[in-house]
Length: 187
Ligand code: SME
Image 1 (tube, rainbow, N blue to C red):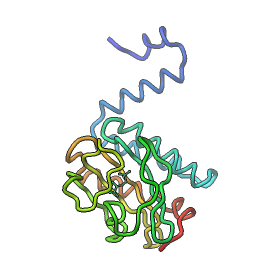
Image 2 (cartoon, rainbow, N blue to C red):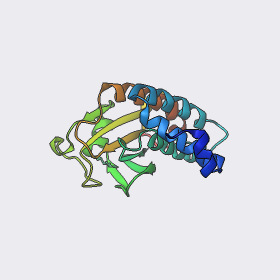
Image 3 (cartoon, rainbow, N blue to C red):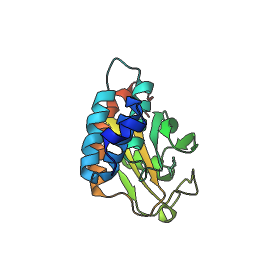
Image 4 (cartoon, rainbow, N blue to C red):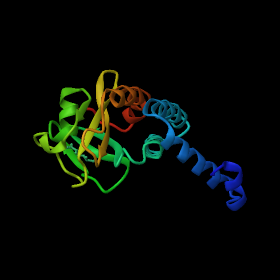
């Protein structure tokens, strides 16, 4: 039976041990508990001592670590005038520019609300950065009521995201938005 103690005998590197134990713990936790962990981790990484790019990069990394299977692609788009530009992310290479009102990202920006897409093929104008993406959630980051960027998450399964994801990711968005605001050029 796996236990941290016996594991340490074979792998004395403490850092690897802690990392693997926490990874296994994440998979065993239910979705709500993992989101609570995600929010508390994001609050640690969202600090003024680091640059906004570093904050966004670590937030993307921690999100991917906590949802390694569900989040095929997770990252940020930054508002830059009339378009979104690709920010820090974890996953396969992605579209670098998305115009206001285009695709799921541009539509969420235009409508200033979270979009949960159960089947991307049924979303008119969906932009396919990867043919493996089947469902998606896009959460606008608002600072002083203005959209400054977005969290975009893709899954390889249909209907991965629901209202639980929306609620927790909107909370995460509130924590991250002030850092995104330092990079954005609002429309
Ligand atoms: N699917 C998005 C494009 C971004 S990628 O998913 C990373 C869209 O339709 O806007």
